[in-house]
Length: 499
Image 1: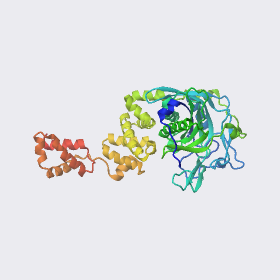
Image 2 (image 1 turned 120 degrees about the vertical axis):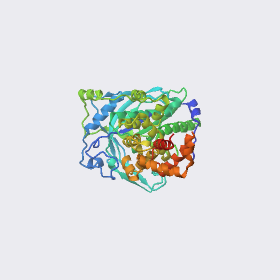
Image 3 (image 1 turned 90 degrees about the vertical axis):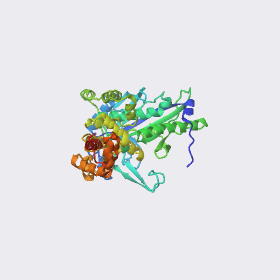
Image 4 (image 1 turned 180 degrees about the vertical axis):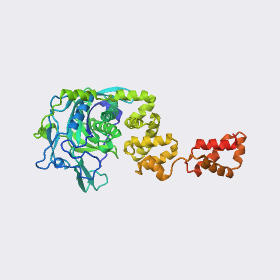
């Protein structure tokens, strides 16, 4: 494959103005699917969470999920949108192997929510208002697994398998208007916007928003126009980017790639593009269709959705804080300085830290574990930290340390067991025999053995060389396999020396 030419990022922004747009797909955490009573679950055996409606079998008819409608209205209100007095479903016609009926039930010209905006906070506290064009309801497609080849993608695969479990899962697609003025902060804004949407839907309680599972996916639209030109450039749409870091990198890459083409007098192809996490590049997908190509028409099997004024009032009253306000409140409540709090946000771990504190852990401990050992392991494995452990598991681990049952070193070993799927922290402590030895009798026996091997230590301590106790403490910790409280061992050693 020929190497793609890229222009230096700063040079690209000297010549061109980037214009952004985002389509974020949010899977809703309803018990059943959008138009059938099939269970909405993750991780089931392939093709088991399905009904005739999911497969589009003849004679099957869709029925709208009421909870999905309520969730969609709540999200629209949280995005500052107008809620339509009447909205209609439409058929979006296109063929794809994991779309069994060859059309998707979506919304087109009559979405449930429209004309909104949301504030996004950048790393230095700058606020950017992102205009929202619409938020509409639709169903998800199934999932293809490409077998053979080296990348797991369709290119080079020997064959593909289709799993319809995801077909029909309720989605809300949030579509922005064109975003101007981001300039050199365009990649940062992309990441911050998706992070804000993720925080918002989690606060609403309508989605798990786990990007590594595809609960939340972003299509990033990028176009460039020469400085001083009014007409917008041709855009590309990088599809289904599923991590905050990848959204940032994909936008940066497309700016550099498009700038290199335009500077040489070339033209940009309006197309979808695939993001490759391993190489940090995009590749061509298919020519980007316009609305006419989808042959939208009203869904004949579904009535319009007409929410009552009472329902909208009820859902508006239940809205949580906006993400920007929530972040500022949490920073004050937790007592973190600007840099400490910004590190959490930039790592995409605000929700994880918050949920860990809600389980009873102190904020500084929650930050320490998520930003320390968990993030280190996640970076080494190139995965999202939230895919390794849950806030509940981290809070249990912290509680064991706070109670004195574990030292930090032992807790790290327990964490490894949790990540490996060995059970809860308490189960791993029991199974591996890792609990801190708190019996003074056992500690004194180990101390006496260590002193017997180093008879001069007591004299050194008594003569004022208290640091000599370190050799005994080290020997005891080794003998106890790290399961002793070093501070208590030190106290006992000094007592033995009469110091």
